[in-house]
Image 1 (cartoon, one colour):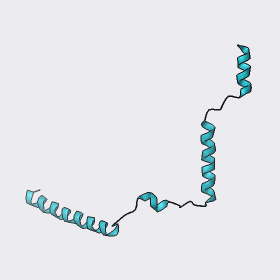
Image 2: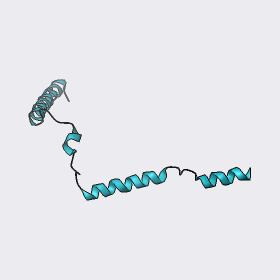
Image 3: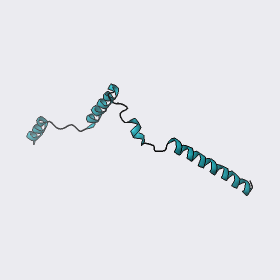
Image 4: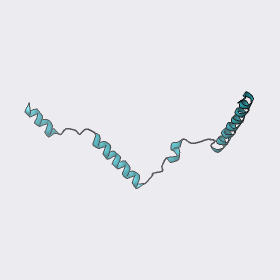
Length: 79
């Protein structure tokens, strides 16, 4: 491919990119952050509340269990 042909193709592509950027700026001039679009989407949703409850229960099941005083005193007597 000749250099003039490549240069003309690049110029066309640059013009297209500029056109697309202008269109994008016109469509989304002052976009909100993504999370602002979904805030409150699950408000008062019983399925969401249940999912949160189950997740909490699972995370708590992974925590180490505190030793009972009864177990501690039995070990102290063995010594």
